[in-house]
Image 1 (cartoon, rainbow, N blue to C red):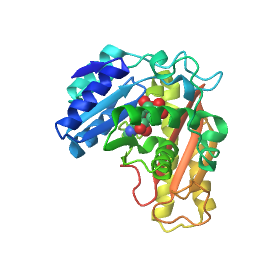
Image 2 (cartoon, rainbow, N blue to C red; image 1 turned 90 degrees about the vertical axis):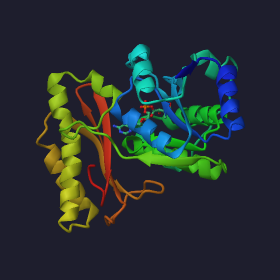
Image 3 (cartoon, rainbow, N blue to C red; image 1 turned 60 degrees about the horizontal axis):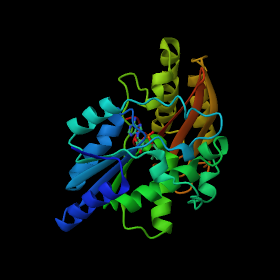
Image 4 (cartoon, rainbow, N blue to C red; image 1 turned 60 degrees about the vertical axis):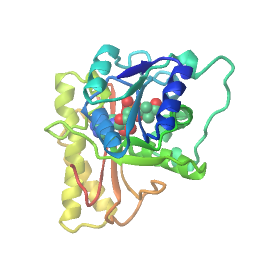
Amino acid sequence: MLEFTTIPALRGWVFEQRTAGRRIGFVPTMGFLHEGHLRLVDEARRRTDAVAMSVFVNPLQFGPGEDLDRYPRDLPRDRALAAGRRVDALFVPEAAAIYPPGAEVLVVPGATADRWEGAVRPGHFTGVLTVVAKLFHLVAPDVACFGQKDIQQATLVRRMVRDLDWPVEIVVVPTVREPDGLALSSRNAYLGPEDRQQAVGLSAALRAGHDAWTAGERDASAIEAAMRARLAMFPGVRPEYISLVEPEALYPVAEALPGTIAMIAARVGSTRLIDNIILGQGLV
Ligand code: PAJ
């Protein structure tokens, strides 16, 4: 595995791949890798000839008072895990390389970014889309893989690519979970043992919602009520939103159809967690 910290070095590798006629797959991450990230690598490898991964804790997508300073980092471990999954090129830039002094142009999404995560984290998706746009320009991938875990992010990246006519195929990979259902997340590292036990409440609530739907319930508010009832069994989980939405712009729906997304965000102790399922797919 090659590792690059500068933009010219990365561009050199990209040029070589293109010259050799290889298709490039790309997996952007903020590091502290887990099996969820690595599943994205597997998917990129399956679809392309050369796989690039970025590890960059993007300051632009963190709000004031968020966890930028304590976001978990372990580059030696990330390096070993990425190499073990046959990543060809690991890009680990310094913040100053991505945001040189004076940079001021941003990629600002539309109303789809104002709901849900965007409502709680103003400016978050501007930070995400700006860095993803920059990375897409640097890596020029044919395929880029994102996790369903962050479904609003994946939706917005898809819209950016469509609205800006970008020839990148966006692949959304199902959420990888712990055996008890908790979605893998770098932020799970913040959870103490008791919070960890409570955190399973999010996936348990999604499962309850999916069970109600499978049993024939189609009324979105009834399904949301089933999810809240299940979540009430986890007193350590404080829900922020529980909602059924359509997949294009994440508008709330009244009727739950196949493909409708059940989303949940909650605090467990001081840690903020999100999760979702797609009705008809359930927890995979
Ligand atoms: P990060 O949180 O490191 O996640 C990188 C990618 O891994 C995202 O596409 C995310 O959805 C995916 N992922 C995380 N947990 C997953 C899980 N349990 N199963 C499957 N995929 C999972 O998301 C970001 O970084 C950043 O916002 C980024 C896109 C890199 C821009 O800075």
